[in-house]
Image (tube, rainbow, N blue to C red; front, side, top):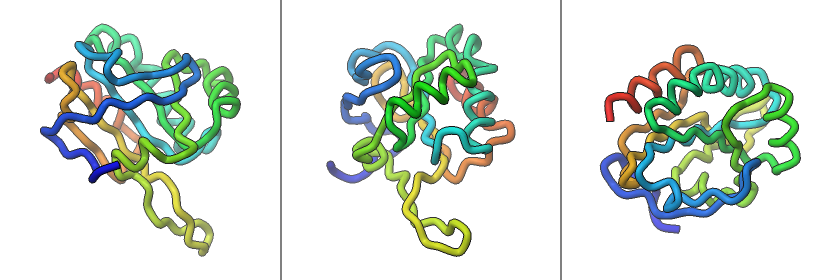
Length: 155
């Protein structure tokens, strides 16, 4: 893959497996797309973030947007996580880090004093023409879903 996408540029078409089947960016043309990358299923911050997006899901849909959560967890873990918290949107499995690479979200992190590679919590809004319009990196969960919804409504 080439360099990470930048705001104002077209996002390369991608195909990824999700809890709802294969997701292709090209199939979502005409609708804003929200991709939120999170480190791991069933962890406190990631659960709260998912619940926040779920609570606003009807408003995202009224704005025409499609929301997807993405992590490196497998589909089985995603199914369990999604069902446990009744998320109304699908979760994309990026085990091979292909999408993580496109959006440049893998970072060296400290976990209990050990250096590990992991996903830096990040969110991206792609407009109906496939152009990256907004990005948030090093996301703090509190209030984030509301901020993303406001950006979608402003498209």
